[in-house]
Image (cartoon, rainbow, N blue to C red; front, side, top):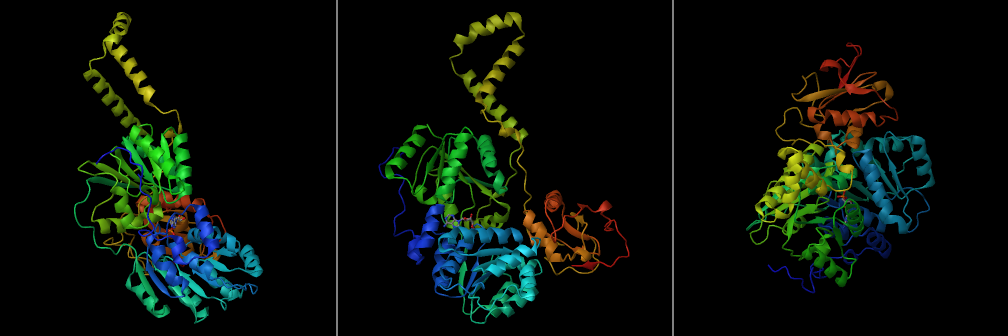
Length: 582
Ligand code: AMP
């Protein structure tokens, strides 16, 4: 393909190929909020789910974190808020498995619903109940709650469900895994029969099917990633992913780029806002980055493409819409700064490299919760995405020395060293030849180092959740009772709070999953004694779980958290004490 700039390159999306948010029937206040957030187009799940949800249909959606499912249900719920909201009881209830998600989902509602004056309240265990009581008392439109705390409030009469128009069960499989089935049933009993019910789940085991059959009426069914494996010739692209916490993403991107040293790379972001922010960050770190998004004029885009092709920029930070149809010969690497919202989008993105027989590299930075979306993409593309460890500072140093060595080798093969002979000869009178060479290499090496210092910091590795299937001892919550021995490869964690503090299994699971990348289904047996609890977790995540629990509260209290002494399951307490096992 030609690399000559063309006046219309890159091709912006045409209206007939992309549905805009405005085509989905959303009201101007919501469209304004989405535009301000820099969302350029709806994700596939939003395209499919928003119209039926606006029409009041029930919906059963199979979609993982990263697909844009939160906006898919939040936007219709906000649009359907009743005009008269003087009564103060919520019109929408969203149930989520963890407090982390409760906070995230309510923040999303706030962002989308700010021009509609939506009153959104997260309620979850671990937060002082007084604050929640006051907020409920003042009137709310949307409650986003973990099931246990929602039930608490229903029992107190502080959360009244009589005016509910919609109930959303988000990440329903996680909620069932965490033992919330009974709580969910009890909550739904309190909701009006004439209501809209929406269920999202990353997986569809038969228990979810049962829940849907019982509580959903003639639901629209949506599945992200149900596409047939992509047929035909696949581009020659090495694909890998790194699991990294959100706050470490810019550093991780820099580290990966330093190690990979691409000729030119394109970094895909979800929104204009993120493109602008990341471009600035990467320029600040010494990369030559250019932004490309739908908010730019054609002239601006052409200029950016010219700089990339001319080699004065080596990093293009772009949204999907802006990069559609883009073909640049120099591109060697595609980086997904976020997991794409659907497998098709992943396939389009990595198609920017590996063209015309060239080899390419595709790298995805996934947050711990987005791990499942990677699996869906692997299934649809029929290609493996290796999960790699983020390069350490030592890896980076080794790689830089390799690059210096390669540069020196290249220089030795060239015929232009004569002008420097006099220097080496005069120094060799005074120093050993080897010493002279070492000093030369040092100077050459240092000249390639960036001016920033943050490459010295290690980026924490996040443990990847092991596959659920075929792992004895990880069948999921609720199925493990009685005094079974500890599964191999697990650690027992001691938590210094028990029954007397009102601790229930879901509090422990909620705290662990809320503070770490660990899923409820990776947590093994839980024992709760009067004064302490023991939780079994995979060895690989033990440090992460212990650090996460130490930094958080359970039932509003700080607890001692440590590895159980000698793994004897004694909990450091009275061996005869009654312990409930889950
Ligand atoms: P979710 O799958 O709901 O957890 O959403 C994943 C992320 O995608 C969130 O950070 C959202 O802010 C973002 N997001 C959702 N929809 C869009 C969209 N249409 N365009 C850009 N970003 C989006």
